[in-house]
Image 1: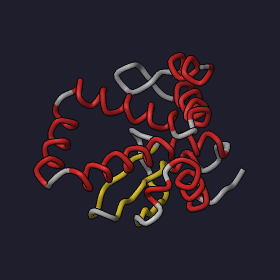
Image 2: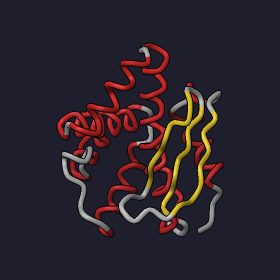
Image 3: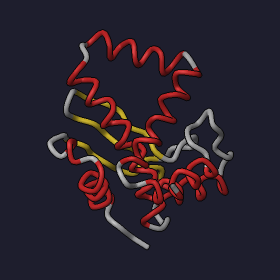
Length: 154
């Protein structure tokens, strides 16, 4: 079941987020006990996506679903960088880290963007995988499996 992280990242960008082609987005495995994926911004055009080592043997579509969520976050943040100033970005980070309702809104809009960009089925496969292995996703964490299934059927 092996696949290259870089190939998956490029596939997600090509299929759904072509505006990110000129960014430096590095991806690699990391032991992450509390998450499957995470990203950090190093500069305006440089990001790092961390992938939990437990995902080394998952099916490709499961991986694509999780990575598409992180890339959607990067797309939203990058568009803010283009249209907002330094202080807007600081405010965004403060709100996200300190106000649960803002974090919930941001996670849900990120999942919606994944669906809008054509990777909803892969996100659904990832959420089903994650729900079986860790605490089930709720509406506070983003879209739920039921919500995604309803959106994809439309």
